[in-house]
Amino acid sequence: MGSLVKGQWRADTNPQEDRLSLSSPFRSWITPDLSVHSPFCAEVDRYHLYVSHACPWANRTMIMRALKGLQSIIPVSVVNWHVGDRGWTFTRGPGVVPDPLHDIDTLYQLYQIADASFSGRVTVPVLWDKKLQAIVNNESSDIVRMFNSSFDGLGANPQSYYPREWRAEIDDVNSRVQETVNLGVYKAGFTTNQTSYEKAVTELFETLDWLEERLKRRRYLVGTGISEADIRLFTTLVRFDAVYYGHFKCNCRPLKDYAALSGYLCDLYQTPGFGETVHFDHIKGHYYESQRAINPSGIVPLGPVLQLDRPHHRNDLS
Image 1 (cartoon, rainbow, N blue to C red):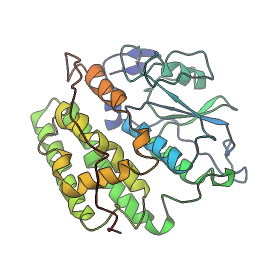
Image 2 (cartoon, helix red, strand yellow):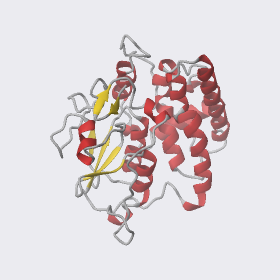
Image 3 (cartoon, helix red, strand yellow):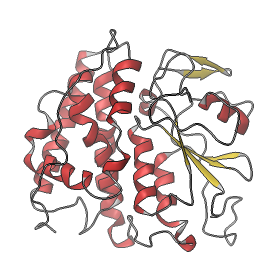
């Protein structure tokens, strides 16, 4: 894991563990046009997205980009899954997409270009403005909502995944899922305290049980279609049996033992815009190879066999 202190990379924390206490420093907003006072407005090929396929928060932005049809509007670079002394890098490897804009080897260098005095923590995703040579935003929840609406005037899919009539319920579901599931697996995986671990795992499985009951009677978490709430939950669920169950000791029950949750996961995985954004070689490689405090050998397990393409029977749910 790694953090930046006075401009130097320090290999003692993990970019994903930082999510437990991180406050994203870049929080500007892209507006649909210049009618709102913002230096950032929606334009084709003005912005560039930097992600890691390993990171569930970056995965959220890739799903929304796909659902909204923004592939031709916002190009993407993908860092190497392995995090060592230099943090996220563009070291060659399967699925790595180098930065076409700058002669850089690490994501840290991009942050330095944006702010030479930057001394915070380097995380993904990062939304970059090519015109102003600036980081617009490195908070995934903001980027997801910008992708949802800011580019509709440029030919994006007009469907909203944060519809006004469901926003309060989406926010409520997001709040519980974020604290006990999205962050809950990290609280369990990185703590060195037994009491803290047991608290995190207990809350995690209480919420999984709650989600199981909720999804027995409805196809999606909120409303009658895919929403932001489904995107945010999916990126943790799809990693659960592959890494969190064993690597993070979240092993009270594998996700495959939840009939409704596992069916819901398969449903979303097989929905265009979801499954193609999931790269298990990056996911497993990152967690098992990079997080040596948890997995000292760096050995990446061959399993489990997830069968996310298996038939499911959820189309009769609304």
